Image 1: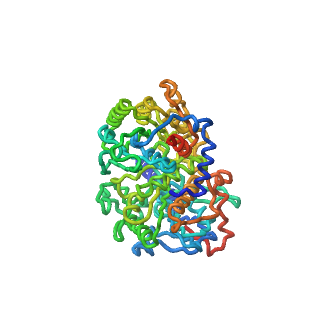
Image 2: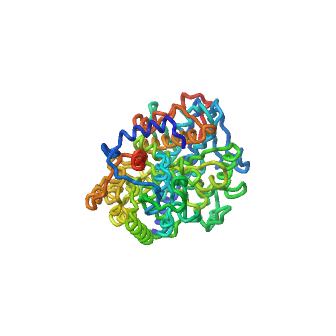
Image 3: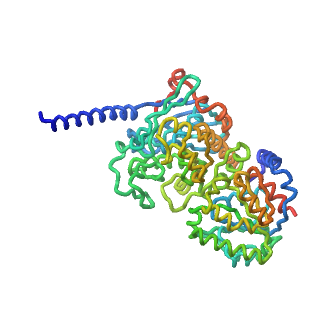
Length: 217
Length: 387
């Protein structure tokens, strides 16, 4: 997408509207980065477009296994198929195929349709995420958890959306949420309990500026 | 005459009276004409049967309005009232028809896509037959239609609707549902012919973007959103990000399922070069656990049962005492459509469509929907199209 004056103005406004102090005080993340979904909602596509707007090059897989992540940049040559999506957009000159990922970003949000298309149940998805997160922790891979779906991807206690939050948010190094996702303060409580850096922004578009800062180092 | 005979005759008389009154009301509703005014941007109007001759003379035929700009560009199609019990669609389409001028490219509008469905009702749910929108010159009266075409026009229903060409098995009702009969065929059931005509229009007029405007229950997960297949998902996501940040409302983006056939957001993309988008705005009137299905509920979206459910976290949209008034739904549709055009124009400048004089979300909230409608009684009769 071209950076027209309209988008540039919008991004500038959104940057100004961000939570004060959030942008200059975020933890560092490093490239190469893999984006993935926790719950198979469309929010991972939103995340990918946010990274593109931020100029951050990434690899993407909606349901990566530990073996794929172990294979590093390029995900071991995986290709998209039915219910399985892969995109390799990492700068291969800087990070050749096989370079270990330094950061993984999870887009949290449950979709029964999305999980169904990938042949998953909520239990399978939670177990898959636990394996991936364990691998990240064992290998010092930095975890960013993003909740950008707002109220639409929140729910009653024990609902699919809340279980996806339980599966990822407490293990993140950095939680990024929009205001309407955190109206009940759930992410604030998780961040406090687990000593996780929390950045709350007003709109999902604000995450563009945040990601630019996050990956600038 | 025995007492039993008198009893039977009384029952028959009451039945006849009730049937007669109801029949008269249904007849009036079916034949009521709600005028559509072609505003300064409308350059020509054709019938849908021009794209599928077998529609000619049927109750499913409908008007197609062209708004053509001076500059070259792309083409956007707006389809409204695919489901005529989701009337924010037609109200939005009429705002475009009466006010919009096109500077670059073309806009094609079908304000009453399922014409037969708009002349049908749902008596079992107690639907109102009409609703009225207040304007500066009085009230504009619209038919409240139904989701499906009338069985008077598309009959008989099959036991199971076998989708063409995929052969998926769908509900028998879906043979009358113009969001299950895409891409259609020229000699199929009536609603398949409607969709085939629209597909021919999309292909022949080289439509770049096709927008199908809907409404959905607050308890249905796919609501307050844009449904888009992969080819449209980037623009849809940009629209989500921009409208949330710049206009203060949130619509989500949901992917179009690949194996659920017959829907506009799936088949238009698969059977043409156009990028389809299906817009859903919340319509509490359609939720099942509500009070009576009144005109007030339709227009305000306020209901105490839904409010109670919202407090239990059972709804998929924000919901409080404010409800979901019609102006919010129509305003969202206007802004989302304009932003889709804007994103199309940025992604493909040579296929840009530039529209002017269309209100955005905040404008509709400030002035309400009726502010944008003109008086058909004082309009040029040649520009008034009864529907």
